Amino acid sequence: MSWTRTYRLALHLLPAGLRRKHGAAMEALFARELRRARERGWMEGILAGTAGVWDVVRRGAYEQLRPGRYATGERHDHSPSEWWNSDTLEPQPAGPNLGGPHMPQYTTRQLLRRHAVSFTIAFVALTAVLLASFAKKQIPALNAQGASAGMIAEVLLLAVPFLAAMTIPMAVFVAVLRDLTRLRADGTLAAARRERDGIRRLVTPVLLAAVGIAAVAFVVTAEIVPRTNERLAAVTARDASAQSDRMMTIAELREAERSVSAGAEPDAVARAAAYEVEVQKKLALAAACVVMALVGVAIALRVPRGGMWLVFGSSFVIFGAYYMSMVAGESLADRLVISPFVGMWWANALLLAAALLLIVSRRRAPLVPGGSEAVAIRG
Image (cartoon, rainbow, N blue to C red; front, side, top):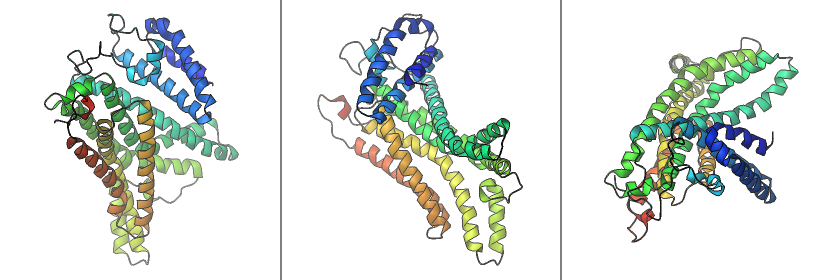
C-alpha cells in the first residue's frame, strides 16, 4: 500500500466536518511534501511518510476524545501547511503573546488523557514494527514446517507479550517527549515557567502515569511473558522442550537459583548467575518506564525546539543506547565479569544520571532577558 493511500485512509480518523473542510488540501500537501522528500533520498521519503500519517492518526485520536470541539466553533481554520506542521496539534495563541494569559490551562485529567492517547499510539506502533520484524523471520520457517494459518496466528499472538516488555518503556519515552513538545508548541510550557511550581504541575501527572505503567510492565515481564514464552517454545518446536530461564516466573527463578547454588556441579555458579540475571532483567525493564519518562522530561525541557524530528531522533539514540547497554550487561553478567545486578541495572543508571544532569544544568541556566526559553525552571 502506498503512502498516499495510507494517508487517505488515516484521514477517516478525523471528524467528518473537519475532513470535508481540510481533507483534500491536506492530502495534496502530503503528496507534495512526500515527493520533495523522496527527491532527497528513499530514507527521507520513509520519514516524511511516517511523520505525515502519524500526525493524522494522533490528530484523529485527539479530536475523537473531544467530540464537541469542532461543532462548538473552536479554532479549526488552520491552513494545510499548518496541518503538516506537527507542532500545531493544539489551539495556537492569538498574536505574539507566547505564553500569555490566553494559553490553555490543562487540568490533571486532561494531561493524563492526552498522555494515555500518546502512549497507546506509540505502544501500538512500536509493537507492530517489532512484530512485523519477528513475523518476517518466523513465517518462512513455519511455512517450511507446514504450519497452518491458525498456528502462525498463534505464534504471532504469543510473541506480543515479550515484545511488549521492550516496547512499553519505549512508548513511555515517546509519549512523554511528544506531550511536552506539544505543550511547548501551544505556549503552555512557556507560561508554566513563569508560575510557581508550574513545570511541576505539568510533569507530575505523566511521571505518576509512568509509575503506574511500570507496575503493569512488571506484571507483564514477571508473570505473562514466562508463560507465553513456554507456550511459544512448545508451538514452534512441536515437542516438550526443557524449561529455560526465560520461561520461569520470578518465584521459579529464585527457587531454581537456590537449588543450583546448593548443588556441587562445576557450573553451579554460572547457572545461578544466569537465573539471577533473568530476575534482575525483569525488574530493570519495569523500572525503565520511570527512567524513560524522566529522560523524556529532561530532553523536552532542555532542548529549546521540539517536534516530530526531536521525537524520532532522540528515540533512535536513546533506544539504541539502552538496548546495547542491556545486551552488553547481560553478556558480562553471564560470564561472571560483573554481578547480575550491575549488568542489568547499569543501563537504567546511565540514563537516569544523564536525565538528572540535564535537569540540574537547566535549573542552573542563567536568566537571559527577552528569551522565555532561557528562563530557569521553577518547581
